Each structure stands twice: as structure tokens, then as C-alpha cells.
Length: 480
Image 1 (cartoon, rainbow, N blue to C red):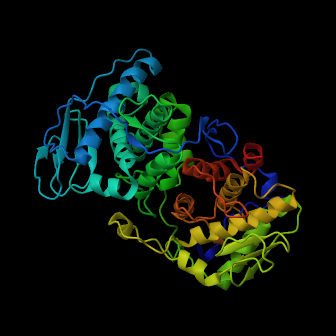
Image 2 (image 1 turned 45 degrees about the vertical axis):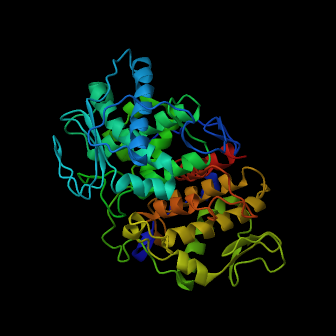
Image 3 (image 1 turned 180 degrees about the vertical axis):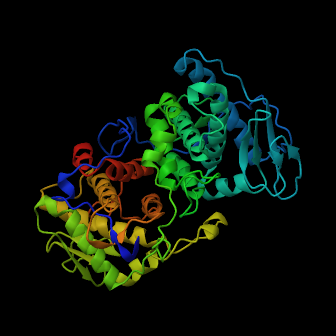
């Protein structure tokens, strides 16, 4: 978040719990509850190549047969199997044709020229429409993704690139022209990849299997890593989207299928896109200093946002971050039901609030800071538990964590609306910092009062998204 001369964009109404935000896009239908992922059961098993899967009969130029070439080739074979059935079934008998050629290269030493340019030092994977080919870097990109997140991260990248090949095959039915903004093409490709992963998660994959808990977490983590830098404009020629935008598109495909993806266009994407440059007055480039002064501004904004609940708001109490009476504690910040306080460790939260070093992330280094909004979102989650207690909601049942994440998202959306009196505002990149907290194993944004988080990162991210786009009403309805 940022602070300065401009105000926190908050809608001055009766209060958050009595409002519903307008998003400009329809909600994805999911079955309520923490025991499923968009209607599929929460599953735990090793994701990756199916045991005993045959070797794909595909010719790959430049392939050396290593682990990453094997994963990438099987990914292409699996994705093509999906689209060979789905394209005619979903798009009025549209014929499917495999891509014309595949290329594996090592960005550290190869200098091959393709129809779309040289692969020299190109740490990437790409679809080239000029010769209808898919290429991938087996030297740097795929090994990095596999080692950091697991094999499904490799599949994620290839499924996305094949999504561009699907656009090329659908033509007018995907609405893509030379004038279509890049970010719309990328949103469609992320969405198409999500529809493929639903097919795999449902057990239909020919080469791959993916669990709806840890497996989909690998996918979301990969999408998070390859997000655009905070402050990028959605109109940039190379814009791919924030992590929030990319996971939105992926989850839309997973939940609604490829027809919904083909319906993404400049109008409906721009209506809900979060990718934007930093405001002119944002001196901290999205990062406010985390101190007692900023802490009070966050408290004021939460009080204003949740005023409509009609309950006594919890108080912030700096200290150890644990409940003094021995109640449920989740340091560095805890909600203590006995005295309706949010106990917080200011120093530890300040460490969490340090700016994100995205270059270090991409290089595979562990970073301490996750950005100011990660810390603010953790505070908001514990505060939201106090509001839930006040209205009589359970704080430790199966849905409490998802409901809490949803309310944090609703608060974030509320802070992004015009006409308020505060001195903080949601900044470019803030939502990605909340998603980073949702995807880490000890994050609190989706934790119940005892610190228990839903098993599925997919569910955790979706809960935040739905609250942000649809407002607080969906939180109690969806996660009652």
C-alpha cells in the first residue's frame, strides 16, 4: 500500500459487511466448502508423470532426452490429447491439428534462428505462429521451475504456450486479431491452460496426474513466479498480468472451461484487470513504511470498512504477537477471543513487510520480505476473525480460513474505491503480496483462529479473489 497526499480509496457507506462490490465480471460457480476444489475432492498424492505412461511419439528438434525434455514432450502430448477431444466438442466441430514442430534449446549456448527470432540467451518458452511451433529452454528455465516447484510447473508453462496455439486454431472464435492487446492474449492462454488442468485433475490425463492440493499449488506457484513486475501497465506491449490476474484467468478456465476462455476480450479483461502503473503520488512505489503510524492507519481503515457489522471491533495490541491468556496464538499476529484483541509483533511484521526482491526470486534465492500488503493482510485476517466472532460465526471450523481470506479480499477491494477519508490506498502489486502469503505454508491470510489453513492453495487464492471482486456478501454465502 502507499501513503501520501492522496486518500485511501474507500467507499463511505454503512460498512463492508453490508455491501457487495461490482466487478464487471461474473463469478465462477463453485461448490461451497473447504472439502473440494471447484467441485473436485481435495486430493494428496505425488503429481507428475503417470506411472507406466508410454513415451510420447513426438519429434523434438534439439532434444537431448534429459528430465526436462521428457517432461516437456509429455506435456505437449498430453495437452494435444486434451485439445483433440475438446476443440471439436466445445467449438462446433472445430478441427484440431497438432503443432507443426517442437524445439528444445539451451539458452546458455544455443544460437539457433527460428521464424520468431534467435534463441540465444532466451530464457523462455514460446509459441511461434509464423511456423506453428512450440519451443522451450531446457538449459535454464525448465530446470529452475522443476527444482523450485516440481514437475507440474514445467507442464504449466507448456500448457500456457499451447494455449496460444489454440488461439491460432480458433481464429475468429477466440476473437484474437492483430489489434488485440497482449495481456488479453495472455489471459486467454492462462485460461486455456486452466481448462486443461481441470481435465488432468479429473483423472483424464493420458500422461499426467495432478492432485488438487499440492499439485495445483505447484501450478499456482509457477504462475506467481512469472508474474509481471509491480507497476507494469496492462497496456504494455509485453504485459502478461499480475499474479492476481494470471491466477484469475487460470481458475476461470479450470472452473468454467474453454468456451469461457475464448470469450475473454479487451472489454471484459480490462474491466477487472489489476495490472496498472504506480500512481504519480506513490512515492514508495507500493511500499509504505511499516511502523506504529502506518499501523494506526490500517486500523482506521479496517474500522471504517467493517463498521456495518455493528459489533465491537478488536483492538491492536503491540507485543509478542501471542495471546497473553494462553488462548490460540498464531504469531507474529494473533486474534485473542478472550479479550477481543489482535496481538502483534511489530518487528516481525516489519520484516515481512520489506519490499519483494523479484530478481532474487527469479534467481531462486529465498527472500525475507514479501511486501507491506502481506503484513497488512495478515493483520486484516486476524481483525476479520474478531468481526466474525462478533456476528456469531465459528472461528475454527472447516470454512473459517476461507471465509477469513475472502473478507481480507473484500477489504482490499473496499480500499480501492473512490471517496474515502483515509491516507492509505491499495497500490499496484499489493494483491500479489497477499497471494504470496496465501501460497506459503505458514501464511495467516487464510488461517483460522488456531492457524489451520485449508489444504488447497487453489481454494485459498480463490477465496481472496472472490472477496475482492464480489464483496463481503459472498464470503458468508460461499463459506458459511
